[in-house]
Length: 429
Image 1 (cartoon, rainbow, N blue to C red):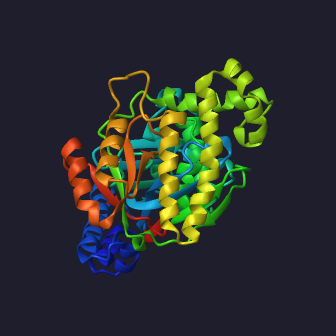
Image 2 (tube, one colour):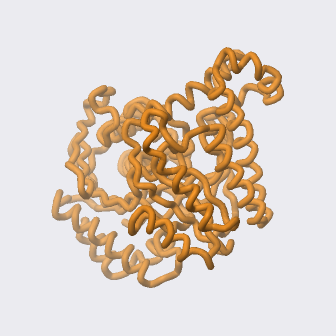
Image 3 (cartoon, rainbow, N blue to C red):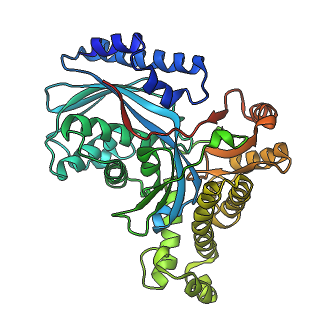
C-alpha cells in the first residue's frame, strides 16, 4: 500500500537511500529536504489515485555532459555523469490497461496500452515519450502492466540536463519493475528511451543523454557500435577536486530549435556521406583532412568545421576520462576549456542563426570567463543554441562566480550540482 511506503519514509527507514542520491554534500538539511520531497510525492499518489497496490518510489536523474559535445550521434565517444537533480515518481500498478501520470505543474496524461502506435500529433510531448517507452518494452516481448504515478522534478526544463532523458529513464524503470520483473539493465533502458525520443517524440538525438541518466556516476561511453556501446565507469570523486560543478541557466528558450539540432547531425552526416559512410566515426580522420578542399565545395564550410569539431572532441573525451583516472584535474580543466572553444568556433552551437538577437550563451561564457580569471573551466553545456553553460569553479571563487552570474541573469540561475553514484533506480518500496 502507498500508505505503508509513506509511513516508512516519514520514519526515516529509507534515509540511507535518499542520502546516497540527494545529500551528497553531507548536510542534514539536504537529507531533510529529500525526505520531505519523497513524502510529498508518495502523499500525492494517495490523494490523486488512491492505489490499492503496493507503491514504489523511482528516480530518473538528469545528466551532465562532461566531454564529447555532439559526438554521440556520430558513433563517437563521450564522458558524462548523472546528477543529483532528478525526476522522482511514486507509482503503483492500477490493474487497468492504461498508464496515468500526474506531474506537478502539468496536466495529467493517460496512455492506453492498447493504442501504442506513433501519433504524429503527439510529437514533442510527454505522452509521446510514455507511449514510445511502453511500445518498445512490448516489442521486447514483455506484457505491459498499467500503473498510476505522481511525479515531481528538480531537473530544469531546457537546461541541458536532459529532462526528456530523465523522464524516459524514469518511465523505463517503472515498467521494468512492474512489467519486466527487473530484467532490463541500465543500458537497455537507455536504448528504450532513445527509441521513444527518436521515433515518437520526433527528436533525432544520440544515446548519450539516456546513458548518462540511466547508468549513473561518471561514465565514459564509446558508441562505435551503438547496439552494444562500451560503458566504463570513471572512478573519480569530483568533490575532492577543489572545484564546484555549476550549471548556469542562461534564461533562454529551447523552443523551435529542433531544426538547429537536426542540422548538426545532417551536416556531419553529409561529410560522412562524401566517403560513402553514414557517420563520421567510420571515416578515418586522415581521409577527412585530405579531402578538405573538395568537402568545402560539396558540403559547405560549416559542415567541414562541425566535422573538425567531431574529430577533436571525440579525442578529447577520451583524454578527459584518462586525466580523471590519473587524478590530473588541471589537465582535465585544460581539455574542458578546449572543448568549449571548439563548440563555439567549430560546432557553432552557442546561438541560433534563426534569431541572432538571442546570444545568451556567448554573453554568459564571456562574463563567466572574466569572473574565473583564468582559473577553472567554462563551456556550453549539452545540445546548445540556448539553455545552459557548465563551469568548474574553484571553491574559493564560488560565491563571487555565483553572484556575478545571478547579477546578470537573476537569482537562482547558478546551480551547484553533484555527480551522483546511481542512475535510474528504485529508491524505496
